[in-house]
View 1 (cartoon, each protein chain N blue to C red):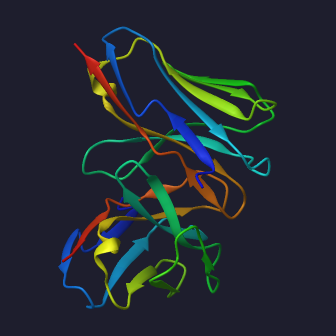
View 2 (cartoon, chains in turn cyan, green):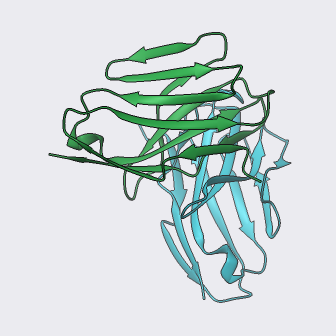
Length: 112
Length: 110
């Protein structure tokens, strides 16, 4: 009963390096999301995918790209990491937009 | 600018007391208002949610009060327990967008 699985759990990058955060869900959900969580700012939406084959920008998309590989998987890519991208990243999914979202355990990313 | 404003930032309550967290939103297009609970090192998990056609929803010790005209909603935790100590987030959602408040760190003292 995995739910939403994110990898890796922790990552340290040097400024300018690239990496991809992976997310997979096994609940047959249509919608998937990427959020970042920073102290005192709650969760801010980076990108979302309302259904397989579609992606849209959220509140803070700059510096990120996403791929909805199939219905299960939604990846987040940092092409050139910056210290401002140090954060905890959460992937979430829901049966449709505007209903309960289920979150993964998070990826703690540090950019030095 | 933050579309969902949450207060207080932190809250300390004695065991058995009532915890109250408030949220206000701007966008009248929001039509789903969930509360999430997050423990350290974990992802947020849905606690309770309400839609704007009702003014109150109760699940066990947790109650959401919703005031559509004032664009405000609140979470009440009755008989607060030490196990309720966590960070609570309110959120407001349209069909394509869910915005979160900044969070309230609740500590329930035994």
